[in-house]
Image (cartoon, rainbow, N blue to C red; front, top):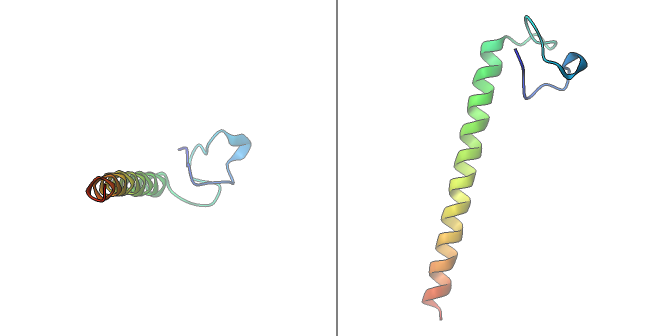
Length: 61
């Protein structure tokens, strides 16, 4: 199990059975998926903001 959220990782190599913090691998996987989904939403929101600002700028010229 390698946990991207954990700062407790032994020798920065990942945990072999359960996390040093007591977290199970399935929990770490779900956390990774939720972080990936949030990053994707923020990126899409940023793209939408840029497109909207460009359209407003075009309309005001």
